[in-house]
Structure formats: C-alpha cells, structure tokens
Length: 149
Image (cartoon, rainbow, N blue to C red; front, side, top):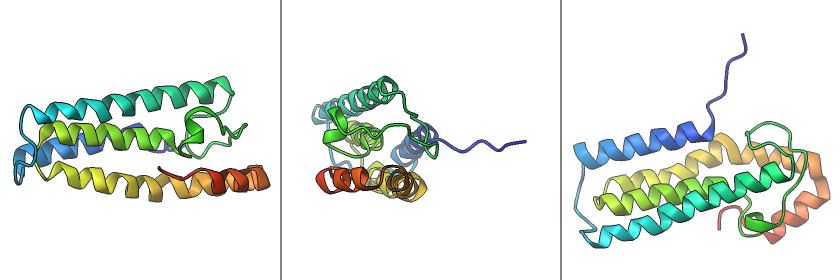
C-alpha cells in the first residue's frame, strides 16, 4: 500500500493548532492589543487571496498543485512574477495575520519557523525538480524572481 505524503495544508493546520496552544498555554507578553490586532485581517486576507490566485493559475496552466509531482508548465506570470512560491508565502501570511490577531508573543515563533519548515520539507526538492525539468528557462526565472519576497 502506497503511503500518502503529508501535504502543505496539513503543515498549515498543524501550525495554526501550535499557535493556538502557544497563545492559550504559553502566551508570553501581550505585544499587540485590541483594537490594533484587527490589523491581522490584512495579512490573513492577503494570504488567502495569494493561495486562491496561485491555485487558479496552476489549474489554468494545467499543471499540478501537489508537491513532488512533475510540473507540466513553468508559470512565470501573475503572482508567480512576485514570488516563486506564492502558496507557501500565502500560508505564512495567514499565520502572520493570526499571530497579530492573537496579540501574544509566542505565536510569532511559529510564523518565523513555518517558512523554514516549508523550505526543508518542500521548496528545495520542488526547485530541484523544476531545474531538472525546465533547465535554462528555470534558471532565468530563478534569477529574476525571489524565492519568497
């Protein structure tokens, strides 16, 4: 029986649960107070929009959204002009929004660690696969567009 890989949304969900645990069990200092925490809605909404837009672009180009599956197209327009990994950036923005809304110090640790986890679990392998599949086209894109921001 084939073992299913843990996909990025599962990491996002786990990060949200961890942030909630930190916020309620080990909150640390209150760094953002109401009503300022409402500003967290901005990165949260931007993160959702970034994910939906990137997902739509991947589907429109007929390529996979799942990590470690071979891409059939190298997308370099739309949100992919701004970042090579808009969905992971979107996840990080969602977490940032939640941390700002929570307002306590410890959830921000998850915000900092999440991109590192994505880098190790997905980004390095995905970029190697894109380099192998698209060669010079990938190299030109990589030089022109930053990995995260």
